[in-house]
Image (cartoon, one colour):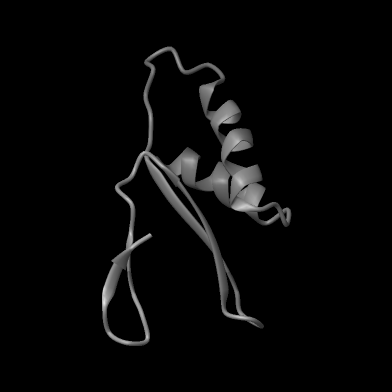
Length: 75
């Protein structure tokens, strides 16, 4: 889990989008993974200047988002 977190964070800090981060992180996690261990990930990158959130889902249930109207919606 810790190595997955570090690999994902290092790829994200390179300025990659979540869609670019996950395949690269997955490839790195698969190297020497004889036990066939896996992780599930929801990765979101928030652009503070615009409020834009870009995310990717890798094995998790889809998130629920609360709109400005207070209504919860699946994304």
